[in-house]
Length: 516
Image (tube, rainbow, N blue to C red):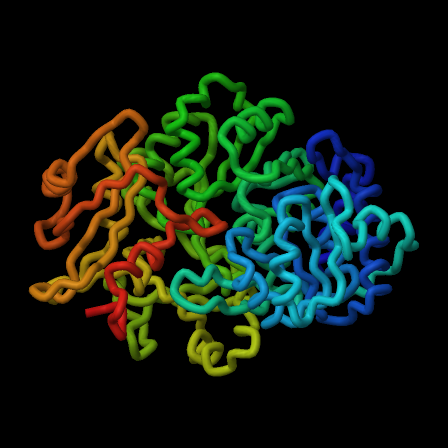
């Protein structure tokens, strides 16, 4: 499978249709392909060779889409950098991957003075923004204008397509090696799940460095649809753009959906064109999902469960199962086509249906391994299965129910407390905007359940009220032992996941391990 084949198909079936819309810039698929071929030629002139890493640090744009395809056209591998990282963390991903070229936009060009002394392998910086050209950078548009289009090198199959660094929420970030087979096979799986065709108008509102959005990038291109791009998630921009461009599809993470439905602004915009919304990347509280379904009754919600190591999709929950009170609403759906899923115990033996174990998967979507980390690769892929680190069970009909990340499970008084379950109960309180449940040290219980809660604007709630509310919904041993009320939003990663590791740090400081 070849990433660039998805582009060639778009040119064949939708040549003069709109490929990308970004602000006032619009182009057809023929124009897009020409720019990609010229940018790939420019990369070759800079010394980029087969499987060399080319990084990008930027907000969403039509040029970001061009970057993905130009890198593949040149036979190199992309390295999309998490936009929330600090300069030392950015430099780590660049140096660890030995990236030779870095693309930056207006926002992140401002970091170059801090980055340059830290970057050891980057030889060229390409400025893909619209402002004045920063010193020492190459101009994106000049590179395209000055280089003739080159023939696609047709990199594909098991060749490295990209390095995608994990969020680093549980330790040092690891570079996930994904091949062309991984990426394109995943895109083919996304097509039927989201019902993409050449009428699709997809909104890039989630960060484009993240695989949740990237999976749709290649699927929309394969279908010959249209990419509509806004720089970042913003409630007003999302709703205005949906109405103006008649957007049909988008992907948002749960924190974004929560902000959208809590804004009270949906009714002020014509969102009737929106057909499908994919959500995933972190657990979706049932209360938030129900509010979203009520606010957007014409939208078919689809959950995608997976992880970077699976390129990223493992399973889908189709819109037909998004029914209030339905028995499957809280599940992560069933395995995607061609993806085999088993729930295993610590000996890698499948457990009976309904029994909690580790979710494991295998298929053409599963990574080649971690960059430069042979032992961690062997552990993650032992016995031919990707071990996700997620705990869950499968019911008799093949639906996967997640109970927690293994790292997020709190063991209190010998009992397993799944943070996702407690958070689901807390989110049902009408005053709650955000919450996170973590384990903190306890001399009596080993670990104690702490709930960190951010109230809605204009609402007040006490810790005692939260505990009393939860008492009506979950067992006593699962109740928060304490509640911390905060006025500021909880810290999130670039992909919108709440950074529980950051929340835990103050409580576990000075200890040799973060479990008790």
